[in-house]
Image (cartoon, one colour):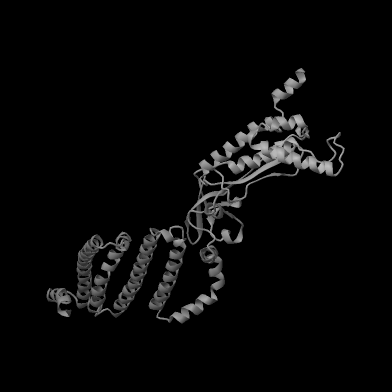
Length: 418
C-alpha cells in the first residue's frame, strides 16, 4: 500500500522536484484523493445501510425500527466503516510526518467518541419515541429521563475526549473537575436543580403529562404538555403556554387536579346568599301551602308531627312562635335543595351531597351547595352546575325568600322617585 501512496512522490522526484517539496505535494494530493474517496464510500455505505433498515422495518411488526430510521441511527452506523478505513490509512499517508500523524490519529479518535455519543443519543431518542406510543408511558416524563441519560453519556464522552487529547488519565481530569466544582455548580445551577427536580417529580409521581395543574406564581392553569430536565410546559385554558422551571414544582406549591380527574366526580361548590329579613317561622296555613311542593309534602307532615309532639310533651306555649320548635321557610328550602340534589341524575350519589349554612355576613346568609357531578368534562360540568342553580334560584320565591343583590343605579333612581 505504501507504494501506491508514494506514486506521486516518485513522479515528482523524477521530474526534478526537491525531495521536501515532493513530500508535501504528495501528502496534499493523497489527502485530497482520500477525502474524495472516503466521502463517496461513506455515501454508498450510508445508502446501502439505510435501504437495508427500511426493508427490515417494512417486514417487522414492531415500530421500534421505524423510530431508529427517523432518528438517523442507520446513518450514524454507516459512518463507522469509513472511519476504520481512514484510521488504517492515516499511518501510511503520514509516514513521513510524525507530528501530523499523531494529530490526525487523535482527531479520528475524538471523532469516534463523538460518533458513539450520537449513536447512543439516537438510540435513546428512538426508545423514548417508541415508549411514548405505549399507553402505560403516555403520561410519564420521558423527556426528563432521556435528557438525564444524554447528559451522562456526554459527560463520559468528554472524559474520554480529555484523556485522548491531553494524554492524561481520566482520574486526573476528575481531580481537576473537583477543584473547579464551585464554579461549575454556579454555571450549571439551573441544570443541576432541574436534574434533581426531574428525578423527584418522576419518582414521587407528582406530575404527569396530561395533568391539569395550577401554579399561581407563574400564572399557569392548564394541561401539562411537556416535562423535561429544566422546564415544564403548561397549555393554559386561554390557549397561551406557560413555561415553569422544573425545580419550581419542588420548591413552590402548586395544585394538581389529577385527583379530581381520577375520582368519581367533579366538585360543585357554590353559595346562594339569602336576605336575612326574608327568613320567617311558618304558620299552619304556610305549611299547607308549602305541602303542595311535591317532594316536600311527606317531609313537612312528619316533621310537623314530631315538632307538635315535642311542644306538647314540654308544655310549650305556642301562642308565640319563638317558643319551642317551629319550621322555617329557610329550613324547608334547605331540605328542598337536599332532595333536589339527591334526585338529580347528573350528580354522583356515592360522593358527598350537602346543603349547608355558611357564616352570615353583611350581605346575608350564604346557603352553599356541595356536590359532585358525574361528568368531569369542563363544558358539561358547567352546564350541569348552571342547570342546578337556575332551578334553585327560580325556586327561592316559592319559599317566600329573597336573594341578596347589590342595588343597581336603576334601583337607586326608583327609590328616589318614591
